[in-house]
Image (cartoon, rainbow, N blue to C red; front, side, top):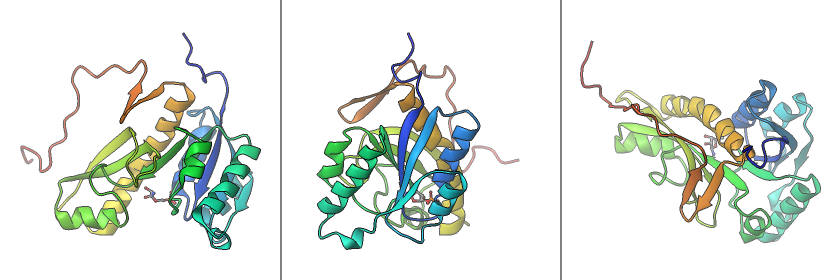
Length: 227
Ligand code: GRF
């Protein structure tokens, strides 16, 4: 049986605050035919976000909504929700959007807001997490795409990628290694949603039709043997 959304391109609204490399990865995945989606609108809370330029180059409608012009988080969210609804958006994609959402947005798009975080949640929620991972001395870091809930970086997890952390890593080198994987997993998470394969069950996200590999890959860092 065909998944419920598979026939139609999914209508996305992407929210950004900065450089927009994840937005670019989504634009590129759509361009390559790997993701059946259409970005209806890109909204930034900052007028200087480079991601706006990326959107314009791709011919996508952009909008700046400056959060500082609203008396409360809820008022800002009401405006966001109104614009996203007016653009007919089905899934809201946070891509480096540096504002916390209130219940106003969560109720407007229940289980329809995704975010990406540059750590293996539930480890290292919040800000500056690549530096925190280096400082802590973990052997693996990574990134997580999840459904946004009221808690910070706390929602049901859709997909994660793990990368090794090396003793000589800096915040910058680890961030770059993680970001490269963000660009791979975000389009995949959105594609699974578009195919109607994601089902939220409490904390867990079930993926319809996914078989666990017989011989799953195992990462060990440092490796067991050295060449
Ligand atoms: C990424 O590291 C993402 O995980 C975090 O903010 C950064 C955004 O990067 N939420 P970009 O704007 O997509 O380049």
